[in-house]
Length: 296
Ligand code: ARG
Image (cartoon, rainbow, N blue to C red; front, side, top):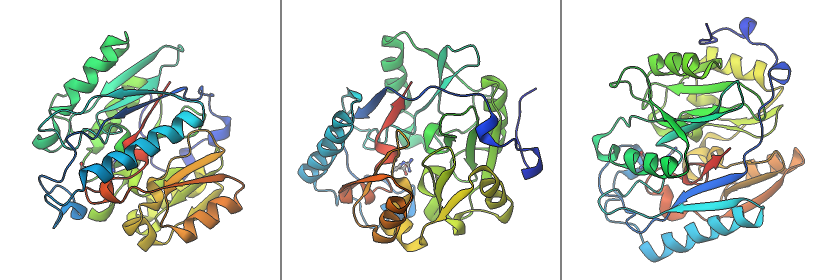
């Protein structure tokens, strides 16, 4: 039975695990109704009603155009009134290649009731494209999709964050359902409430990490998995969401501009950095990675 991998000794070198095809498309949700209307993470505090909508739309459009210029087909879901966080399209689902090559999408169960209405909208979009959608066995199990679960680049291995939005038991069920090992990583700092705020896999061997956001056991797993594990200054990760950048192809890193140390470190790894401004979305606790969903 495929399940959780808890100790470095049980982790096969990811480069020896079965391969996984690269993403070809990107899904985004237009921020027509984006705002900060409630507080479910520390960044939202003090920001209710503070979003400059025109600026947010322009920042979103620039991100959309960046993915297009990288050669991805970008699909867009319309915004929905009353669901200001729908724009964070990484959170409602987790697309997965099954071992037989077919693909399926595991739908989330958002922790906050404010966000639960986003899931059926995203599910309807997948269904319209004939994608098979799945759910975790226990309907009460909290799980926030690619917000907390990240694939190892090109390989059949998943890193799963838990502690704030996703339950550890959800990760165990996910591993069984997808017949793919999951490395569970307990998150310890409310400022890094999703795994995609503190871990950013870049290539098969390199990743960015916020050391302060993990338990020592979790960090040891990541050290084994990524020979080049680059520590990001915690202040850049907090204020600039440095670790919420996205490397879709092992070559480019799209990231909020205000992260000089992280950007220099990524360039030193040989990647091309594309800087964007996500200041309006930072007010809600999100940035580049959570505004896009990479599609198989
Ligand atoms: N306001 C949203 C929330 O707290 C932001 C989500 C950002 N997404 C992410 N994957 N970090 O749920």
